[in-house]
Image 1 (tube, rainbow, N blue to C red):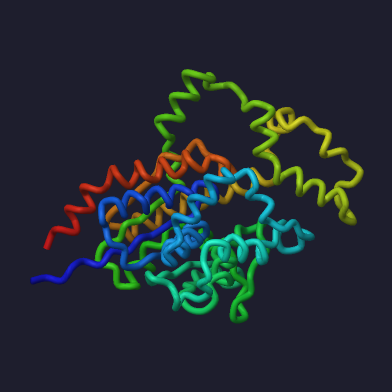
Image 2 (cartoon, rainbow, N blue to C red):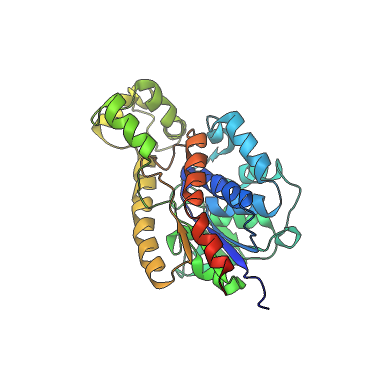
Length: 320
């Protein structure tokens, strides 16, 4: 009699789209799909760590309660020498509020995270030691978060070289790899209906939505205004958000969107070379990388995306 196949779950990068990983996990749990290994990149590493510690439901409750509106209160604006934000203290808070686990060795499910060596351009696999330190590395979005030094190497977001680390999961010993790609640009059926039927395809977001989506931008501009050599002579905070958006994307949107485009291209290449057995691509193409307030929508699309693949997963696990 053959032994059961081991399952590796790969949770890719995607900033605010990362909440979809929660929906994917819920669908797999409902179907009693066992997860033996987890490989995570960026936000996928964060959610993977909380799932591996048995606290994914605590994270979901927290996100739904705050609905992403206060997420930026957990980010520290710093002088932009290495990055616009320093997440060391806040990442620790966002993780430790859900679990007391501090090291990889304590986790209930084996987990690895990927980061990028900034000097050598190499993928770095993090699988032992301090969890928060590893999270800071895998989540250090270039230009936005300051790099993290671990064992003499400056590390940034793993999505720079391996946004959906399928090969890492296989190296862990996974017989079946289920990968979640958040950067496919596939648009939600629901969002497409609302955009085309209710608001019209060319309508700009409301001033209220723009204000909410540019909260981080305003904080950063305020920081710059008070910094030596910053933008203190320009009345940034008095510019109408809708007017600014209609003229040109702001600095944060430019950074995030540019890297998202890069990650999408890298993912296509990597997945063509190292194919997962099951690929889940939640329909989140309409979400910008900083739409942290679309928690319910992201989770729902992740759940739907996984449900659509359940029959294929079960067939694969049942095969000899």
